[in-house]
Each structure stands twice: as C-alpha cells, then as structure tokens.
Amino acid sequence: MKKLILFLLPIFALFLISCGEKQENPNDMPDLAPEVETQLIAKATSLFGKMPDVMPGTETDTPELIELGKKLYNEKALSVNGTQNCNTCHDITNGKAGVDNKSLSDGAIPGTKGTRNSPTVLNAGFHFVQFWDGRAKDLQEQAGGPILNPVEMGMPNEAAVVKAINGIVEYKDLFVKAYPNDKNPITYFNITNAIAAFERTLISRSRFDFYLAGNKKSLTNKEKNGLKLFTEVGCITCHSGHQIGANLYQKMGLVKPYENTKDLGRYDVTKAETDKYMFKVASLRNAALTYPYFHDGAVEKLEDAVKKMAVMNVGKELKAEEVDQLVAFIGSLSDFNLTKVKKQ
Image (cartoon, rainbow, N blue to C red; front, side, top):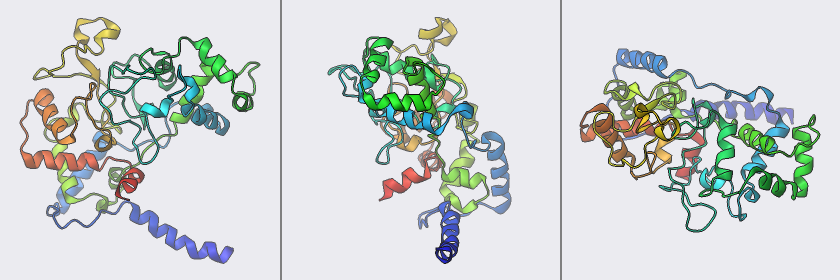
C-alpha cells in the first residue's frame, strides 16, 4: 500500500499543476509582452485580490451542522405541496452553477413565478448583502425568505415549517447532533441556520484564481486581453473585489435608462428616492454559466449583457472584438470543476 501511495503521489502532483493549464487554441491572440503581463497581474491582484479560503460565519459550523444543512437544502417538505426545495431554483447538481437558468423561477404552486431572476448560490456568502435589493443581511436571513414567500415555496408560516420537519423521523437525530445544547433543536431559526452553514461550503475556484496565484498558462491570450480591457473600459467601477462585484449597490441604467422601469429595486426596501433602480451589483464569478442575465432575467446571451451594460452603465459602445475578449475573460471566472463537467 505504501509503495502504491508513493507511486501515485507524482501523478497527483502533475494533475494539480495541470489544473490551471490553458487549452491549446489555434485561434488565440498573440502573447502579451512580458512587461505588459507583469503589470496586468499586479493590477488585477490589486483590484480583485485573493479569493478567501472560507466564508464569513464559518467559525461555529460543524460537520454535523453542514450535513443537516445539505439535507435541508434538498428537502421538498420545506415547500407547501412538497414539490420544491432550495436546489430547485439554486441547482448545484449535474454541472449546474447554483441556478435554474430560467428568467423567473416557477413557484411551488402551479402558475406562480418569482418576481426576480434567481441568482447563484455559489459564493453567495461572500456578498455584502443578499437578494437583488439587499433585504437580507446574510445567508441565514436569505434562506428563510423563499420558504415563506407565497410565490416561491409557499409555506404559510414558520410553525408550519417546523411541523413539517418534525414529522420526518430521521431529522430528530440529525438536529440533536447539529444542536447538542438545545432542548428543542427543531426550530425555524435552526433550520435556516443549518441551510446557511451548508451554503457557506459552496465556494468556487476558477482558472482566473490560478492565474493570480502565478500560473500564467491558466488563461488564454484572448482571456488575458479581455482582463486588460476589463480594467480599462470602466467595468471595474462596479465589478471589483474577489467576487468581481457583489460589494455595492449601483443604478441599473446609470448613463442610459434600462427598459424595465417597473422594478424599482432597492427603493422597495428603503422607500428612498435615491434608491430607485438601485440593485446589488452581480458577481461575475460563474456568470458564463448563470444565464439569463440581470435582475429580471431579460437577456439570454452573455454577449448581449456585456454590450448592454457597457452602454447603460459605462456609456460606451463596444466593438465586436472587445465584446468577444470581455466574454472570454468572464468565462475564465467559471468554476474549474463545473467547466470540466460541461465539456464531458
């Protein structure tokens, strides 16, 4: 056995090294000059920084709590008619990037739909607030929303949720293990707390992260040119930090108004005139996999989303080759394992 391990170690090391390697692309652009790439990496590191290894709030997360949260994330008894779970709209199975890829998600009750596009759950715990309008401060508060929302999972109240989970025998032991100090551990607070603990494990890693870590071969030349363009045309005004966004609110249609004027965004929460059409800036991590785009899911293709945002929020008409390069860079932000699944 020891000999087998010694034999496999070099192979495993080679696999890790090759994870960030770019694919050969005969249609790729010329190499960046060494000094240009050195400056680009330094600038990108300054703008975006290193992806943290863990999400905020993990200090008290135990394996038992995470296991319970994972089961609850996939529990259809949390919906009014037993047809939906968290994963229905935030799908993390079979290569999905934490979304259902629908403009508006279907509710548990036939004929109902959500009012905004379901964002990805991947990396969500790194966001400065939850929901497009920021009405939840953290993952736990967010987890409790859809369960009680009449056009989403449709449960009438917290007591009904607790009753449903209490009625499933296997949960009794799981809750005792996750909350050993609670006399009555099956509570709505603990349900949402456990779901949040599981969601804090959903961290994605991309070829872009490998690039910032020093592997220059992890990006194609087109992706590198897209990164360079991204830092130059105004994208970084909103899309900065290790989530490439998700750290501030911004007006949808800062320069040119967005067509959808019905959704007032953060104004619905604050009633402040200055918050009309303000939304949480989306993280661009996994954006190539989380179509359709914007808070209303109105744009199907990433190319069109890039062009529209450039006009609306930067005031710039991009050339076709610029859009192509920016889309290529955004593609490098996709989770490495998910893109491998897509290729299979």
